[in-house]
Image (cartoon, rainbow, N blue to C red; front, side):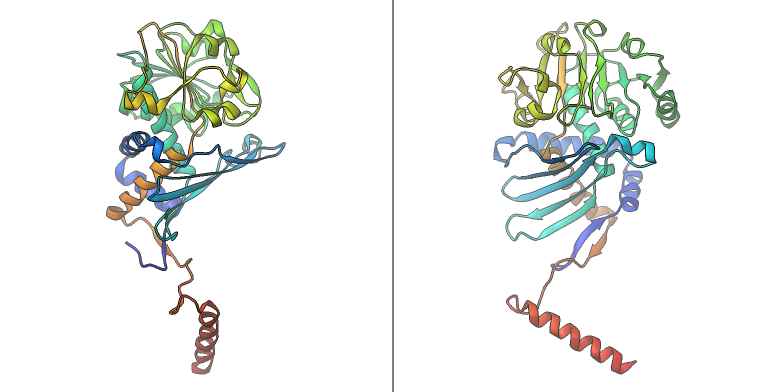
Length: 354
């Protein structure tokens, strides 16, 4: 696919074309399989909370990890105020590299790819934790993530009906239009309370950076599953604390989730379960149909690693990339300066020939 001194780069345009080639639901299902594969070898990975630079306006983060064979990182921001200026709340790019050589083997946009992997992770968690036979999703917060979330749960979890609510009704109308031909039954609701009525699965994915109460204790009952995926930085939550105290809570990486997730509202030693342990059978998931389960998803580097591995493999067949000349590769590895001087000589020859 590439020479040693070029790196495949997937632009936004090529990512869109790849997703259209395969189909959104197929991409999500494939990424989910990679996530489950990597979660099964969770203990092999380097793991740290993401490195965050916070400001009043938002956050910029780096998310690195490695399984000893490949290394990856993602750059991502979260700036809720951006929508007021016609900008994306979240943008991202990432890189996959070989641990053996340290050479990058893939560089890509990750705004679209993150939406796909976030939806895939929600679906993995929902499939493991939601009540059997779930068919109705309440989707609260209908911004950039919403359609991906709905399609993921349709493809992987049997969801057939989606009840939408957003404080900005135009966001719900946008989501409904985009999902009109998806095979899902779409209902726009006038309140979060109305949206959760009759839903077995509730997903919250709001953007505001504040302590918010999207779901209060009286709004949720036994026998439901919640994906709380909007809280992703300190000072940003979506659920009332009492909802947490009633729930069986599942997280990706506790050390990060206690900083950024819903459980930042709880004591530092409050017991939670890790999703990877459920997937490997090490701990129980939903223990009864009447349980209230909560996936406190903030997004973790291993999920990005999985998405990058999927993309690397998908490119083998698609060719949806551009080669970037970004690795200095002198004829003699110790003679980097000589490479520069030979370029001077080449440019001089070109001027003479002109």
